[in-house]
Image 1: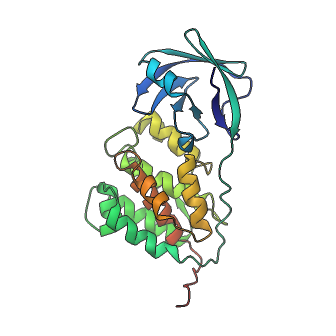
Image 2: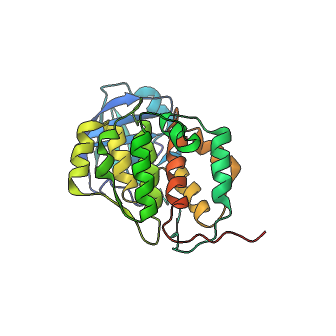
Length: 273
């Protein structure tokens, strides 16, 4: 039987014993709610995050919404099938964005986003300065990033805004958080009431996506993109794959990463031509 795989930093305990049910099924993955956490079971290793399990295509084909999934003693059980769980997916080493840096690719990333992005109300406001329902919250976030201190609780009313399992505003802020946790001096604060309010306002998928981002983690493909960016590399092919994630989710998250890095509150050295 083919093994299933999880990340080395997975939040799935080694001796987990849990029973969950399939909540959503997609073309390449399905979500399982277990012990108040939403786990994503995906067929592509590059999509693994700390709450993911990478499974064979055969299992994805067999499950249906409402199907029970059990994980016990290092094995995944579905019906009469049993899969060994291997903790062998190593996430990228993202490094740290130092306070004084030289990043040639920040301006190029902005240009690529404007040219090829899949736009939402949030990215319309961010990339093109168009007035949308998120303009006021966006200005608040950008001012806080420039000032070097900001609490997401100030804009919590905007979370859950937009369509889909991970609304656009949530994805944008998840990108900011992911990049912020890789900075030498993080500036985005999350007080205790924030996650209580977030849970009330948004989807479970988005809640756990932001929960991971607040710990400096995301899908491995987005972490790889950020890892390259932090050492001044911008791979066009990887960028195109990232912005194509979801309907607008990939573009929203990359815009959040761009917003945090370009608003590093310390001087960015412009490269000499």
